Length: 289
Image (cartoon, rainbow, N blue to C red; front, side, top):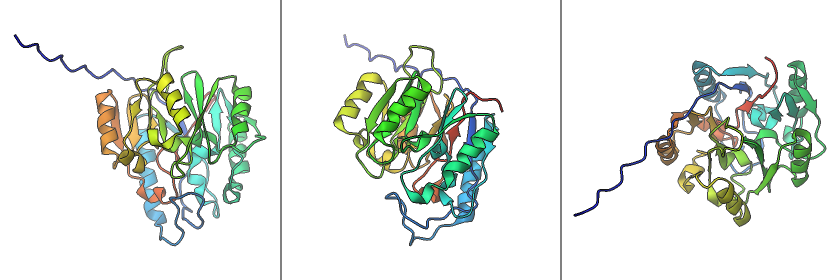
């Protein structure tokens, strides 16, 4: 008598939690210099298309009940749209950036000023760091990228400021120059001691970092190279909905299998500057509106 195949496991029940984000309308977006492999100044950009695509992301957040704050963009600072690099915000404190490249340093005081005006405590950095581009909160730890942008010493600074363990992860592929291009935290809030769900691109990390991710997050979604190349991991999640690239089709199927609801948003024009959905989204944690 043949044995019956086990019934497929039902997807986990996911819970949406409303979030508060900082975004910047890309009214001055262009690619006039190159500080990452995605940027080609000789290729034309369409600012009006970038604004329309950005608006679709903004509208999707608001339609689902998320609160979105705006910082004004400034002519001559076309990368301000990538607000994730504008700081790391936790417990009402904003650890503001110190950019690697001179082209973005004019943004530093603008972000610091916005945080001060909106009631956040502001910590000026000693070391080069690029905010939530390289620092991602995952449960009770902060995952921190190294190798291209943020200094190793910024990881210790981050740990001293927030009193949370910091796990350093080394990026090795210059196309994935920030941690948020190669790893996404999908569970925005978990109970103490629980392991949050993440997704990551194994090939973007060195061997030691892959081993650390496998140890800490054994059930993580491992994304294919094709979906990584589509900037699929530059995604934002509210615990149920995952806002991601429409080109990352395999990743979307993986998300559905785990009980998440993909929300495809096309930011292909902004990808010409090396940024996607998460790059345009900085989470604000812990301060009053």
